[in-house]
Length: 354
Length: 284
Image (cartoon, rainbow over all chains, first blue to last red; front, side, top):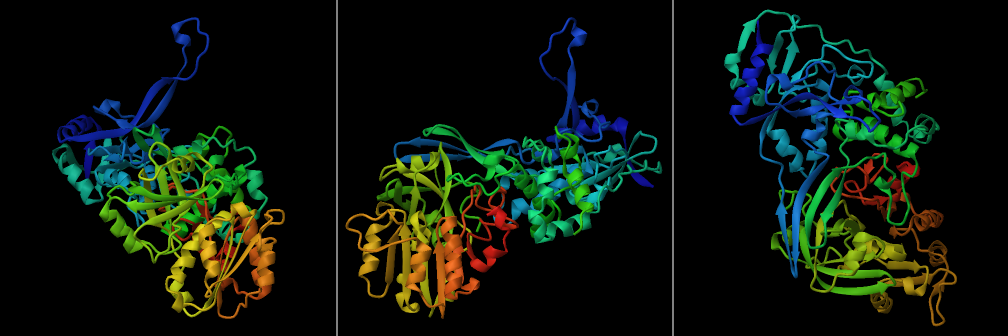
């Protein structure tokens, strides 16, 4: 016997959580216009879909059919742009105002295991020595209810990263879809998860319905072989880097969509009298990222920048924080405009001599 | 280390109490903390070699060393070349104006390990400020160190920074100062050497015995100075230098200042030549 949440009770749960003051967030797919083009009739207007984790009001707003939303869960904790402080300068006085993330309690219902893992991977980064409270305030006030994957696509690679379609890393509650498709088995993992589910305890029931089999995600590369190749200092100057990154256009999409890429920039918005200092996503793919004032650029070519991204994720980051900075969501490859990504690179590396 | 603010990216407010033009386009600002708690934290944490982010709201922040020594913590001095948006804003600030400072960040020169040893400082151009912080930290407790030699060069006589302090060091009999300018950079009344820093260093020929070298300069100078020191018999582990890279956060999160696996902002900026030679040279 396991605890079960039936899909038709989800509406009640959303209402209950919202009534308790929680913002409920989940995978949502929206239609959006893609580009301008001549049309003859209304039906010619082409629409594209766009998906992300976004606030919902009712169960019907969720979309659990997608393998995963286009955008990762990262932006809910580390927004693309976020005000850090405001400033007002008057004669001999600088007044500053601290901006904090909105103090809202949230439940994310239907996170993917790779997205939840990504958050856990970045926790030590935002916490070493200096604690970034923009990240941690949101982490502390968000309950993550993950749904194990029962389907995958060609780009999924969690298993290659030694994670799984039902990993619990970073999750407060893990749900396993039922075989009959009518709900989920509930596994509460943390106190924060138990607390949130107390709110909807009367909506759960005991049952013996088996869980659907988790998605089969084929292993795409030998991670250990890749890591030992990356750790060999001789390979830093390998011609491999030039070859693999030849077609990279440096758009930075992979880093923006990545659930673990955390690089950022500060920009002042305003003038020298008043304004806001913001923290914005930045990307190691951009040439200005490391450019010195003198014009010297330590990573002056796209191949040096792609090498940095791979080395950072699989060599430098685990050296400092134990985990690889990749949870295997595959968005970098799935949405790359020139069909490259971590999978392709590591597959190639697997075939090289260490 | 978290600091007085809950927001780790929020800078302290500093008042410019003095400023000095060092060379064309190069200016020193002397800054005082406006908030005693910020100052207290600085006094507790600052050691020579550490850096900070100096800024002007509306323009941004720039990374330079703290040019004042750890033996004088009532104020901060920073020296910079006016070259971009932030440094232009800093250069146009007047005495009495307020600017921002975050820090001190990074590691330091372990000067207590230099006690009883001879010291040679080798520096070029605008890289004297970080070296000067160590020099004064040692000169302020002169009795703890052996012979102190300073080799400093710039492209032209005008480009030498801290000219008033160079005069002071020249007069001291407990400091050997060797000044040089690049060939063609001398003025008619120049009485010192003419030649590149590494060459002049080899001519000065300091003994590597019981000696620590602290070098700082443009990458090309560092490269050839390391070769010269090796020729003179210095061990890589007795040669210290300080690296710089573009930074935004200063606290190991924004992801850009690393050389290979080493974060300059956290594990640096001070490294021994032995540590630098282990880094992937293509990433420097």
